Length: 311
Image 1 (cartoon, helix red, strand yellow):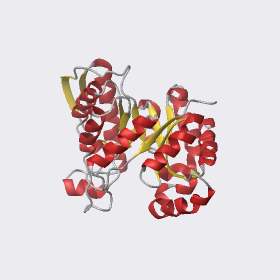
Image 2 (cartoon, helix red, strand yellow):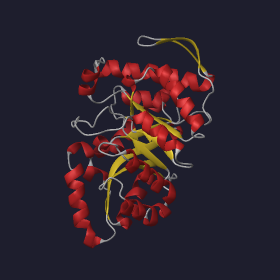
Image 3 (tube, one colour):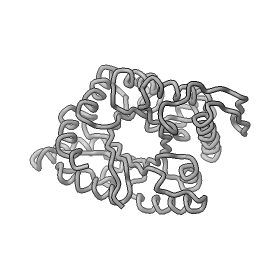
Image 4 (tube, one colour):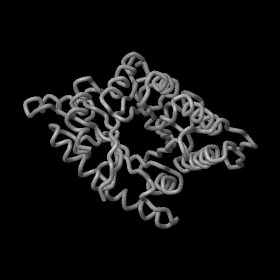
């Protein structure tokens, strides 16, 4: 099945001043790139000495300074915000932006952050169960503009969430992760979008099969979930420039967690078009791209000029 393909840019804000992130947002909007994505960490993972802007404040600032660009997080840490407060934040930002919020969320990924903040880390099972309750609370808040929920981790009593979101039926809820025991069942039951993280790119077809099986078990049509993939893009204008682009990509994203080679997005524009076409044929409707050079003007212009028109 061939589906439309939305292409977004992931700009982890580690080491960037606000003006630098805003410039990238403006360039994406001017070039017709549909979305820009941020990370949700209190500091750059593994490098607490480097500047890093807070995720939600930054998204708000970008959405108030753009007109068409969609902005989201890849992904929010569920542990950082009470779900009722998050629901209120999300509906408010959806109102402010005229319906351009993407609500990406996950169970949390950096234990050290939690220890520094004095937050409970817990087991993967516990974090996943907290995320389940948050997804139920968000679903209720967006649908009913109120929350009345009693769970193991959260209790909310007759809390109004007004005004509701601009987007109908709600801002897309993006759940990232690939765990078959905990995460994919949550995706099947609650998500509008499933994002395959870079570390799972070598298992994409298997993970798709697992998710489709889980959807079948609960009677959900998997076509109602937008399949999204996060990957590193190393694009060169021609073969002459490719070696240097590949070198930079290997230096920045060569570790196993980034899936640089599994993603297959290294090459000239035609090679990138071909690989994105393969992902689209597999059923992916969205690709969120790290770029080898952290979203330089030249790379964004090359992507917009020679790749996006094919999709």
